[in-house]
Image (cartoon, rainbow, N blue to C red; front, side, top):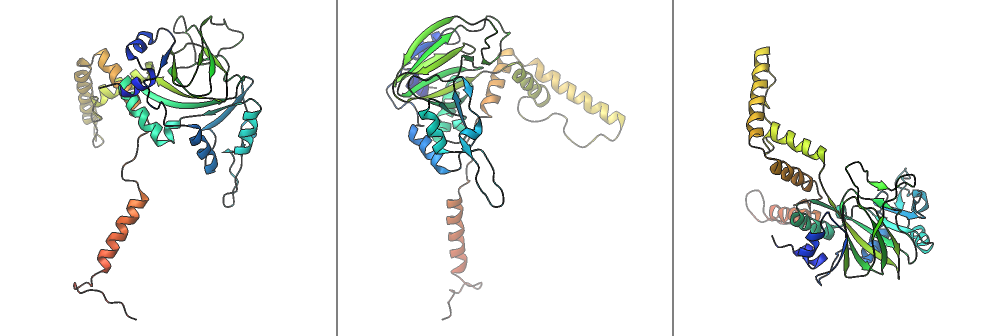
Length: 331
């Protein structure tokens, strides 16, 4: 498959893969539009009145802002649910230096969802999308590690990035780097501008500060599988043969002999499929399993099409009497 989305994001894919899981790097885009999601889409989401927490979040001075500071409740019927994004509060916080974070854009913005489906196929791994807006001179999130490889796509303004060394072994956790733990050494410092993409390897600590103008960037997180994913895929292969067909499903055994026979059948099936399973196949299955959980469009769910179809059907039925004669309306 031609890596058309990755080409668009990093330009030189050979150079990108030379950095993969090894070191951070900045890449110049391939020239096409980098993101289907823009600041105008944020305006539309906030103006809709339906946008709410946890899809929207704000940070200031290295801390997550309390939700009530940027959300409001709405009266819906006899209830007053809270957590709706409040445009006025969000704009006030941005003017005061806070960072706006939009989570899981691929779950609610169809063009981003479609782009990520293609990029996931190119990378062979599940991908999620986040969006950050940070005023000039203000810090974003505190120094932290992500449990994902990250592609930072700068779309407006500029942002200063500092990337620190990654974990030295497997004993690390995602999240904020605590002040009471050894601080990772700084490896890389750059100012990212529109048309550029920063790659941060999984686990490499990083932080950013708004530079010029209102900084806006799309953060694409490439999710790698873990041991738990491998275990679940092994279960699929052993008990279902990797094809979704559960072994031994059927009526409940009515005797001890029937129960033992069912157990024997399940074990035979497990041994047969396990004998053919390779480590590479297990990894590929686990990655695909994660990709299958990415948001997808649901075909055929269009109320407009449904209304049109019903209108057509009703018109055809109403045009004729039961005996086939034209229906005549009385005055």
